[in-house]
Length: 276
Image: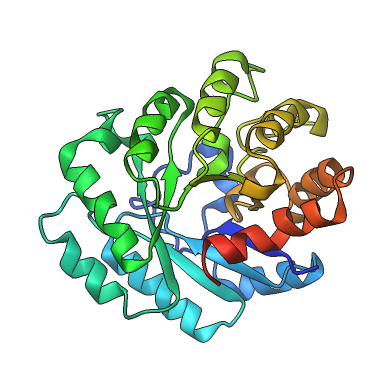
């Protein structure tokens, strides 16, 4: 079975640029580069990964592309470009020349305007992605889930994937409203969901697999194995444990699925979605 980690990051740590890393995550206040990840993937029998942006700059997008050219296990890059820029199509056209660049992401979760994804300038940027065969990663907090059906319904042929289950309140064991909204999003078949980022939404120091299972059940029932994909969120996940512990959570849960469903979840869906 081919396993692809659909969501991880690389960075050269900068105190200002990475100010979102709080004191409770101090362990990840350092550089994380391909030479750090390669042995971890090998140890966990993961054949490749998708490097996802963590900064909103073209410089970081180019940095990740450079790493992908140097390391074959980086199968693709999800970068950033200013989707609201009047010149966005020129950027997309230029990046279309780089086969490793698979899609884009904007850090919507940090925007003061919670429905930024529905503003005309943003929608115009999204409308151009399909033309250049780019996917879009949706990074939001759970309060923004209410806007996503409107977004994805406007572009039925655009490939969308929801990052980190839209960050449910696992630590507070709050599931009701998130469950309702996630089911509405899952009705749109052009939307996938990354099963990632769960341990850092739980109690960082005291999480248990039992805390996470109810949220996994919601996702699998809503999206099915056919529209879910494994992601570690390395190195962010290290604030709550190890890569192997994250892998253990999903392997344990998906062990009751059929062999075909496991192949879809652990690799084939990411390969198909990102055109690897």
